[in-house]
Image (cartoon, rainbow, N blue to C red; front, side):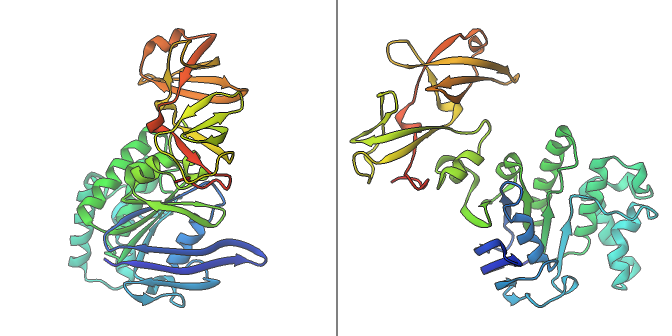
Length: 352
């Protein structure tokens, strides 16, 4: 396996700038997830690492070697795509072994590595089947097996689970994580699904508008988002936001309510700020101490309940495990524990 260094990488299509000064160091054996909305540049970056897109400027190194000018086949990486891209006329064993046959690998070696990969992925009973006789999850496992047998320096995953239903995605996430634990392989995984990012990653790279917004462990991005984009993108249901004005030790909302903060911030009194609080941290409280919000919708999810509110005319959500919330309404009173508040300055950056 190998480390991957991305140094000041830019990508433009004509006058359209898709990626801007991307700097990223991926350690040997690390599982890194690139996450962000459609059009943020995450798949383009993955394709540049694979050699499927040219680098406009900057440098990509795999195992310390510059690969900008190398063809994809010479980079010693394996890629798993959103579409399974299996050969329909070949059985599972044939699909998994095809790249090895092209390399004129010895038959006993092919049998050994295909057998080992099939065992890891639970494909042993399916080796003689053709793709049309497989489920979506089984086809994706074959696509992963085809990548594994090559024993590459790195694995690249381009939204591999997006064509599967919710239950299969959950199952495949667990299988991919277990597989990474077994192989200890350097892996880069692209998704727009922040649940996949949170559950799979050693580190998450949050991207927006072709710019890396924050890099860190899943809980670092969840607990201390660097800016409003990361705060709003990571977490489900998403974080609530309210406009406010900074006061010594607190923030004043538009209706005059002053919300206490856990620590003073390096802001001037009167500075405009945005308060953020996750739905699971909002507390429903008594009329005397809370802010009144009107209930617009109640969603039971089984595990918990999501209340959709209107607070100061803005959409606001609460997530609670208390089933008494099913009978809430038409109004509830809410408060914000200071230790769970996030404060962002006028530029949308985390205030400190």
